[in-house]
Image (tube, rainbow, N blue to C red):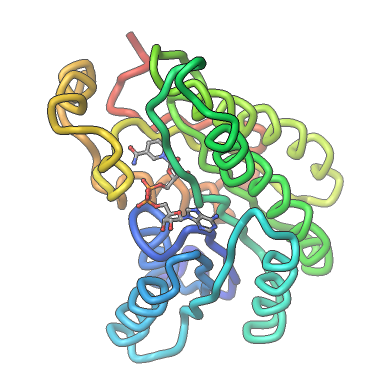
Length: 250
Ligand code: NAD
């Protein structure tokens, strides 16, 4: 019940999918959470749903476009003003694309790099000073199995998720003296709205190639994020936690 008691978390892309699941799990373990997203209505609904269930204002929804430095500043300030600080950042917001190198337009490339890669850097840049004030922190960057291995049709996505993996390790080393731990998570097939970019026919081979022979519920990633966020992971930094039903073990 109290694995995150007294902690304050900021989750990007928290309106739905994995981010929303993490917000629910975090609050269940005693955290207070700001969820930021570009889907303003859904973000408000998600926050209201969690707050309604627990009968307290433990989740605050916020407009956050992760590509905009000013939005990040406001988000971190909101954590400090509303809840008193910031202990945990989950860089979860992301978009997918399923195009190869030649098929990807420059606009698509810039858009995915800005959200998936620059957004993670901006999040850490703005969160670290606030965490330093608290004397410690935990940052969890959501990469992908596509940040570990290649495939033929998601060039820009692979590029950004691979970048998140090493950006995480660089940050882990830089901020170890500040007691700020930084780790990456590498989900496989997770059953969220993101999978709408592929057809059921395109998805099935990925599930067939997964040793556990199924996609995961977003909470199955959320519990891993919660572990890394909590003091249970006090000696874990610069690591990559794969949550893929065995996909990359083969
Ligand atoms: P999702 O599409 O349900 O959630 C992603 C969220 O990010 C959405 O709420 C979306 O509005 C938000 N977002 C997009 N652009 C944004 C921006 N500019 N600023 C702020 N928020 C923005 O998908 P999900 O599966 O919950 O994805 C969460 C993370 O997990 C992503 O980083 C994704 O790349 C990663 N991931 C997902 C899978 C999967 O199979 N679903 C697999 C591996 C990794």
